[in-house]
Image (cartoon, rainbow, N blue to C red; front, side):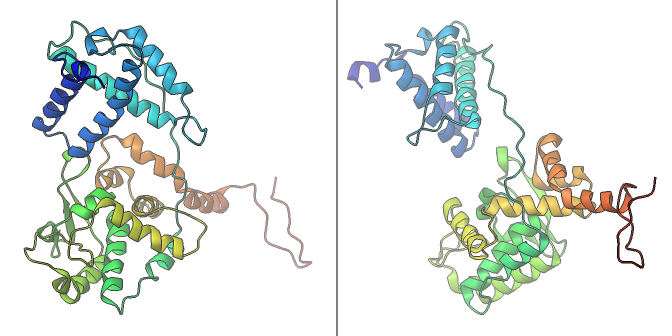
Length: 328
């Protein structure tokens, strides 16, 4: 990039730096800030290729052409960008230009009326049965220190339905054994909530805390609940790798990691009769619609009820061994 463009006080580079600082000042999570910057870089590159170096030069028709370019873009493997990726790119663009307009850095907001692509409500790709979850949990070698730690991690994920970012952020003082709860201090959108944790998961956590964690700690102890074999807190990638490894080893023909156990937690609770609003609060969903996806996944319970109550079913076999058709 030419130096004069990079140093332009009204150019994209300067405005992006100011926007990034604004996000951090207003306590937007570092992950969200990095994500928005990443998606905006795509717009900046596209604009530079067309001779547009300042946000003030961008109009609504320009953004509509950019949206069309995202739709027609192809990844290295030839596949189109997912609707979710396209929406993330455009959501970041709308937020950026809204900030520019409110900060009086541009005369009007060209992205105000930009219509985002509609995301389809997709069900989770895989959900494990209770028996399959137990098979995964049983793979940990509990006679070894790290195996015992892993069992505590897996039990906690399944019992609480935490996101992976929440699992790695849990600290010792977040666990309340007496009440059987866990405080989530770094939830999505920097929200906090208290979630229940089951008796079985607590027992495994107690064994880990008394028998394993003291030997893993490398001073100074920052208080993170789960530690790697190096004594450091887990990061998202490492916790994903750990949980995914156990699910792969179970050879269930299903893939996933921490989020799969989160799906299982929600689905199994609903199948057990939990009210969807309680599950919503436990998972930390801002909208009930997000949680209601799991009511569609909990099909096994619906199948049981259907088989037991629907009149159009086969009768029990008669003395001749033949099944009788359902009554009229």
